[in-house]
Structure formats: structure tokens, C-alpha cells
Length: 502
Image 1: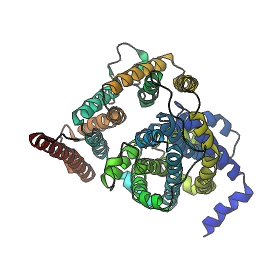
Image 2: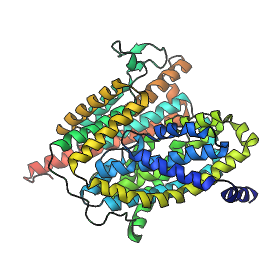
Image 3: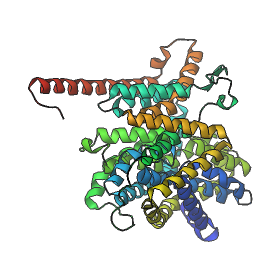
């Protein structure tokens, strides 16, 4: 109770509430701009934290992280362009809802789920820090390898009826992830003498190219799109819809908690897993991919929860759980703070300030989401040519600002053309993105595990966490293969009986 009173006292003795409003607002705008990731938005604010007190500086960066992760869903829903890596999954059903004239509903579900996920994340952050830290410490390179394999196994379910196409594009994504310096020996691979490729290709460049640039190329040859019907406002789900969304939101919060507290894992995998599990346990599986509200709620809840749970390894061990928490770690160091167990003992005022700011953040997110989103809906009703040109300019400016590199722009354009061709050939590129994101994690931890074991591959089964993940991954793959086999048998029986398969 004493700790709670200390946190509440901050609200009228410090400018923490205005700082939270600033962080959430800047985060939503930054996340909504194509090519401007949460980490970039946070990095742009770091110079302004030099003159701020340590608690206010950390609150500003942390709330910007939350706002940006939510803001990424805005372009994902309205223009099929993920504003952040973790909002890639939201494009599947969010944009499909927009095409049905349900953009206000999709945006409302996204905001509603994000607020709930943030509240769940806050409770977990404050009450379960120590147990979750122990879980994180139990992870070995073998466990991380198996976790990556578990994520890759989802490719088998992303392909739908085109399982082999999904596997092929997933392999291509993993091949791209091997470009750059070898994670163990440091030898350059597939760089072709280009210094810009030594550090590898950042996933955000491929994602922006595949999703945003390819969409612009596709839209260039399409007739004018239908405008969003109805008033330019946000619609929250009604009672019946809220009850339907409980299950995917619980799944998203659980996955986000587990994935976020794993050091170095990031939140993109969590959104994929949350979406996959929501579809697996849904009564309306056939709606997924065609505008399912549950397909929006699950990843958005996961994304918001991850912004809180990812703070656990950052604050406790100084190990960032994502690029954004790496920027937050830099903010801590700038303030002369050393992350770790001593941070809680030596700087309790910083922790109290962070908890106070992150408790207010979901409510501020709700307010600012309502105020900002109608303008986003208005934006999508502008003429296609102007909007596409504006988006392309934002993409180029955002991508260039990452490394001030023209080479990055070239990668984005190549990825955009590749995405355009894949769209025309009906090749799914979500598996390619998943392979790209997880490729380095799987390879590096596989190599480290073999170094530890002296080349003995049985070590992956001797580690209990690794063995459990590998078993679940095998169940995913064989379950998808079995489903494919059943569909093929059904199709052949239909042909034999003279029935045209659906």
C-alpha cells in the first residue's frame, strides 16, 4: 500500500502525466508513419531526455514504445502497410475488414485490445517480475533455438492450401537472414564485396518493401478504391463482440507475456503465435484471413503486452528484449543508471516513476487513440494518387533516416518489386517475413549449442525446455500435414463423385 501511495503521489508532485501524454502521442504518430519504427521514434526523443530527470526520461521513452506499437496498427488496417514489425500480422484481417467497409470497427478493436493488453502487462510487470525473471534465466541457447523452430513451425499453418508455397517462401526468408557476418566465426557471407551487407539486411527494410512498396506498385494499376463508409470516427466493439474477443485477447496476453520477457526475443514472433493460436481455438476459423475481428484482437493484445513484459529483462539484467528496449537501455545509461538488480535497490524512485507512468499509459492511449484515429480514417479517403505519393515519400524518408543510407533504399525497392511479383504469383510472403525474422535466432543459437556440446546434437533433447518446444513444433507441422492430407482426400473423393470442390 505504501508503494502505491508513493506512485500516486507522483501524479500531483511531478509532470509525469504530461510526459505520458507526450510519449503516447509521439509514439502513435511515429508508429503510424510507414517506415518509422518504434525504435526510431524513441531514438529521435533520446536527445530531449538529457535535460530531464531520470524517472521522466524513462517514462517518456517507455510510453513512446507503447504508443508506437499501437500506432503501427493504423496503417496496417487502413492501407495494408505495417507501421511496425509486430503489426505485420494485423494487416491480414485488419485490412480485410477495411475492404469490407469496417475500418472504424477494426480500429476500435485494435485500440480496445491494445488498452486491455497494456493493463494486463502492467499487472504482470509489477506483480510477477521476479518469477518471470527466473523463467528468463532458465533459457539456454538450446531453448532459444527450439523457440525459433517453434516460431518457424507456424509457417506450416500460414500457407493454408498452399503449404509448399509457404515453405518455399519461408526458406527464402531464412536464406536472406544468413547474409552478413557469420554469428560464430565472423566470416562475411553472401556480401559480394558490399560493405553495407556486412551487418546483414535489417528485417524492417524487407518488411517495408514487401508490404508497403509492393502495395503501392499494385495500387498504381488499380481503379480508385472505395471510400470508408460512414462518419470518420472510431467504433468500439459492442457487448456481443467483446465477449467473442475475450478468448483471443487472453491468448494474446499470455503469448505476449511469455515472449516479451525472453531476453532478445522481441515481439514479432509473439504476434504471429498469438494469431495462429487464436485461429486454432476459434469457433470461426473460416473468417481468419477474410476480415476476422479475432485476427485483429489477438496480435494487438500481444503487441501491447509485450511492451510491458519486454521491460523485465531490460531492467533486471540490462538485456534488451527488442530494438525499442535497446533504445530504452541507452536512455538508462545516459541518465547514469545501471540496469540490474541494484537498480531496484539504489534507484527506487526511477522504478516508482516508471510504474506510475506505465499505469497511466493505457488510459492515455485510450484518450489519444480516440482523438487521433478519426484523422487517420479521413486520410484514407483522399485520392489514391496523392495518398500513394505521400506514403512513398514517407517510406523513403523513414527508411533513409535509419542509417542515412541510399543502399537501404535500394534494398526496399528490390524487396518491393519482389513482393509485387509474389502477389501476382499468389505466393504468401508472411512465411518469408517469419523466416527472415527467426533465421538469425535459429542459426546463431544452433551453432552456440553445438559449441557448448562439442557437436553432440542430443543436447537439444537433453534440455527440457528445448525438448518441449521441439515436440510442440512437431505437433504443429504434422497437424498441418495431416490437415492437408485430409483436404486432398476430400478433394479427390469429390472429384470421383462428380462434385466440384470448393
